[in-house]
Length: 242
Image 1 (spheres, rainbow, N blue to C red):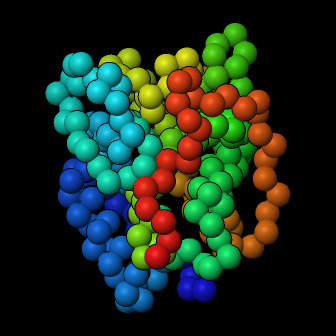
Image 2 (cartoon, rainbow, N blue to C red):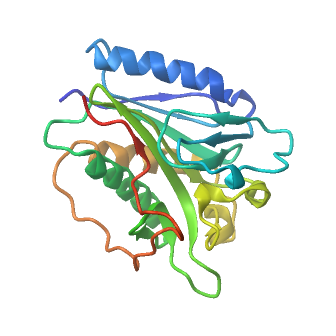
């Protein structure tokens, strides 16, 4: 197993246009699949953009995207938002033969749960709904990190988005991930202080290195199952290992 490499760049005013990043992802994916590049995680920010996965319904799209483009993409899942204040991670890694796609998704979720725990914020999975969530209290359950991936030739692409100090008003423009009975939040909103993308980078790197070493781990206990209303519960994946 090769050491996990990190590519970091594209933060703040240097945020990377989504289509440019998508093309770079494809190039990195081809290099990893061909054995010409080590497993790589690209960490960056995007300017405001909505990306619609293969399961996005017409009614889930923003009626008024506020000037941000809406781009159809080749990942699983539904529609989501990327923008400043959100750490986007694209793990482009070869899945070992013993690691199934669902296990990979759970490992990425576990890494992000651990990042939140480093900030004394309790999160977990909600079976039937991908991503990382906070339990309902006086507010409904709310998602703090979203996932959507593609696997081709046994190598992953696309990945996760962790809300740090993103402007949550963007989420009022659409139905995030097609889930209308839950909310979206950020580390800053939950902790009552500014938590930037830069603040979480060391923790994200550390936990991804740990979880993507493919060794056994103890998963955080799940919250109560809540399949998405009116839809079959699925992992947001497009493609199978090849």
